Image (tube, rainbow over all chains, first blue to last red; front, side, top):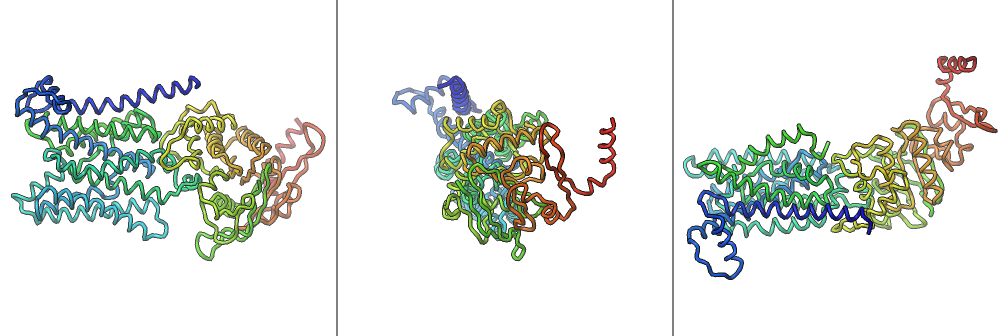
Amino acid sequence: MSRRYLGFKGREILEASLLIFIPLIAFLASLFIGRYNIPSYLALRILISKILPIQTTVPREAEIIMIHVRLPRALASILVGSALALSGTTFQGLFRNPLVSAQILGVASGAGFGAALGLLISGDPVVVQGLSFIFGVAAVVMAYGISRTYREASMLTLVLAGIAVGAFFSALTSLLKYVADPYERLPSIVFWLMGSLSAVSFKEISLGFIPIIVPCLILVAARWRLNILSLGEEEAKALGINVEKMRMLIIGCCTLMTSAAVSMAGVVGWVGLVVPHICRMLVGPDHKVLIPASISIGAAYLLIVDCIARTVAPFEMPLGVLTSVIGAPFFFYLLRGRVSGWR
Amino acid sequence: MEVKISDLHFSFTPGREVLRGVSLEVRSGEIFCILGPNGCGKTTLLKSICGILRPERGSIFFDGLEANSISMIERAKIVGYVPQEQYRLVFPYRVLDFVTMGRAPYLSIFSTPSERDYEIAEEALKEVNAYHLKDRSYTELSGGEKQLVSIAKALAQQPKVLLLDEPTSHLDLKNQIMVLRILSKLAEEGLIIIMTTHFPMHALLHSSRIGLMADGRFIAVGTAEEVMTEDFLRKAYDVDIRILSVKNPTGDGYIRICVPVEAIHASRVIRRFGEEAEG
């Protein structure tokens, strides 16, 4: 094997190990950091006692906070962060536009409406999550269906249909807010729409796990095809790709992931927009590397932001607000720096 | 290898045919040059051959194999297509990664390119003398370099037929000559090359055969001598054109060039030649 390939492999190994270690460190940090102070040696001992069968005596309170409060939040951060970042990267490649995110087809508006409906009629977390998921998927199905009624189902008609469907569901959400009881239901709807992981337990995670992991694995396996699709429709066809089928597969996967993520954490903005750009700066535009990087950095990004949301203020900051507050200026910085990985 | 097209019809909107019965035969080692005015159906013909567009009537055969009887993936292993516009890439792919995308027909949906695929892409880059560009970013390349890299991407498909839509349109003189030289070499190696062009000179210089297209069909097909006549060109372009024989300045014989009559009448040109002759 020539030196060239050794160099190639060397870089790949370095990148791969970084992409494993960054989220791992963020994961551990988010278990160790919080309002309730658990000394790190104690936290480590709790963690080890859960994995290996060792008997240790640790304060019951510390154990409950770590295992039943921080751990589900951290796991949810990983799922939601990687799902949003992955679908953002995928959509940017598919739509050949670095400014779209997975919300472009109306997922967030649909899921938001579903959650508001659930909060209004029942309030049971499972109902809220379920309705939110269903309406998130329904919004994209509607957008896709509308775009297909035109003779030429171009990507532009799909985006326009997505915007229209999104606006429709936003209006319905406003209507629900208007009729909701302003002392009990309305605050919970508003709070949900801001996005938060504070109420997440293992139950919510188990509900969202499958619709995130399965599409995620499919997209990782098919990631190189995104390069071809990003060349444009005719070029992909000339290379023998069934563009229509690939698009349906990709949009389906992204929709399931995003709906599941939104139904778990509420509307967490800007992750799907900012993380793909960070990743392109780190590993370049080739989707073969970019897709795994997005999963890893997306998880790390939300772990870190959620850590900040829990600790920085004397009260809990809404996660969706914070991702936007951090994400938007960072995005401007990227635009200014012209190291953005697209032009 | 042989490409045979018979009686091809295509229309974007019903009732307005863009291709109105195109027939054609091209063999290995030939450069077939398609000339014709804008909108006469040159690009549509190329897109129909590679399968981007589906003709309504007529058939295309690759070595007797009907094009519709094979999958798009199989067809992409036979036909490589270099589009007219340079790729407007949104993402600045590395040149080698970009050329490797030509391996797509050989890779299943859930696989990524192997080392062998990268090697084939590198060989394709060497074939067009662009190996030194392999680590550059595609979006930073000049027009000529982009054209070479696009040809390399089509070659990475390991096709038997290479379709090029106006491969020299955006290029300066030096790059035009370079691209044409590479295409001649590829044809000598046994590839079928079908290209469109707006430069009658290129057709005269480099092609084995020329097809002159007008209004959705060939009005003349044959060697340069047969097709590039004042009558046929006038019929195709609806402009008065003269074929001039000029004494070969570098050796024996004459070379033929075509010039629109209006350019001859533009006195500025004549005077400049006159001045040069005196001085």
